[in-house]
Image 1 (tube, helix red, strand yellow):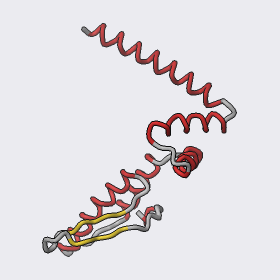
Image 2: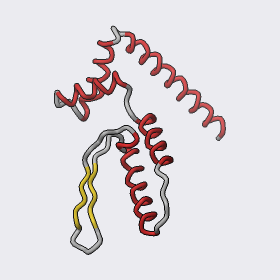
Image 3: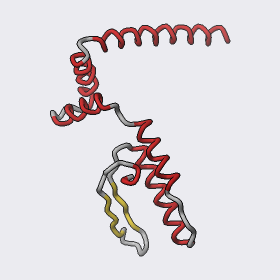
Image 4: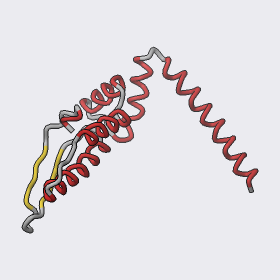
Length: 135
């Protein structure tokens, strides 16, 4: 993950109790990247065991792509960090985020969100009608 630009820095391996079996704990910034990194680590170990060469470049590129697909934008990310610092989580997080985005955008995000809700409602109605017509 670090090679892909995510400085997570934490990882530990501890014996499980059974010879050759270990528990591995590591940090990640994006869950999908962490899962991919874990699977890649297994592939790397398997290559080492079999004496085969392993090219990391495809894995590094895929982790970068996953990070870009999943991570929050800089504005939303900073608002989430602000919420975490204020111990705002769970059900309270979404209203907090929407309110902060509305404040920071001088209300423009509210107009966009209302338009999005209306569009989604119209789409849902069209889909329902289409499904009824198929019956």
